[in-house]
Image (cartoon, rainbow, N blue to C red; front, side, top):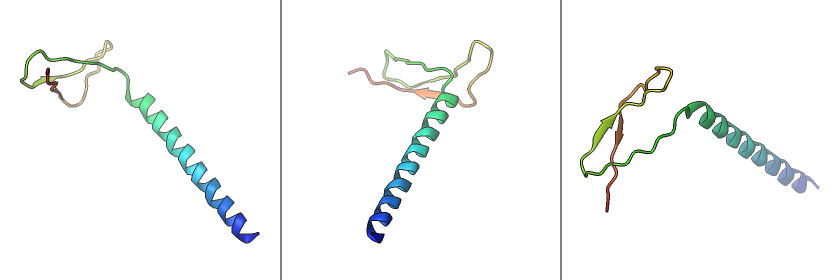
Length: 70
């Protein structure tokens, strides 16, 4: 009986950990993604871009986009 209780406890703790990790990931994604953009380059040279929201907020860093067209 002790072995089963130990296994059940480990399974419950594992399930709680997975649910909390999933919840944290969902919250961070919803907080961190205000604007989602897809940019496509027609050249093979990298370029720089800075994202500016309609309310005037801009990204802290320059975002480097480089997509190869094959």
